[in-house]
Amino acid sequence: NANQLARYAKICQEKGLVPIVEPEILITSDYDLARSKHVATAVLAECIKELKALQVDFKHCLLKPQMVMPGSDCPTQASPEEVAAATLDVFDATLPHELAGVFFLSGGLTEEQATVNLNTINRLAQERYQGSQPWKLSFSFGRALQASILKLWGGKDENADSCRAQGAKLAKANSSACEGEYQPPHPSLLQAATLVETFRGHNSGTQ
Image 1 (tube, rainbow, N blue to C red):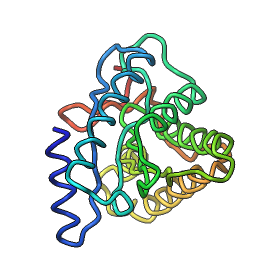
Image 2: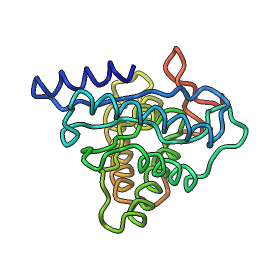
Image 3: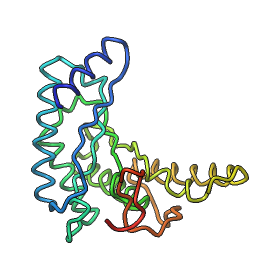
């Protein structure tokens, strides 16, 4: 899989496109934070090795990983501070500083959790790298940008304006989190404990 991702990235760059490399680690399991950190380090190290082997230009390449956190079925979930520290530890061990940016997935997190974690990661990065942060740390959220909107829409055209307004609120919250400047309350309309993908799209309850 790492080799295929690298081949895809190289082809993109040969055609004048910026590749978005997305190594996937399944979250529907009961592994703890330590196991998540170990596996994420191994997976990202292998991906970077393959990208280097094919001479992919990291300055024009984006990474789309998930945050380093326990599996969705783990009885002990991690705090935002623990997620941030584990995530940056893995990045420090594996990612070249030339990499253009990291755009996080939101799988398994509620809208609010995704924003808070992103904000905490960026705040820790500002402290850790003292103004010399090597990568842009941003978001490529799916469900964490859409779940409230889909609930609000309800399949009715007359809800379109409300959906656009809700989308703007969610985008603003996450944009602020990219700078470590997010302030609650969060605009999410959901009460779910998690948003874990299933074959139907997502599950809005605890897995």
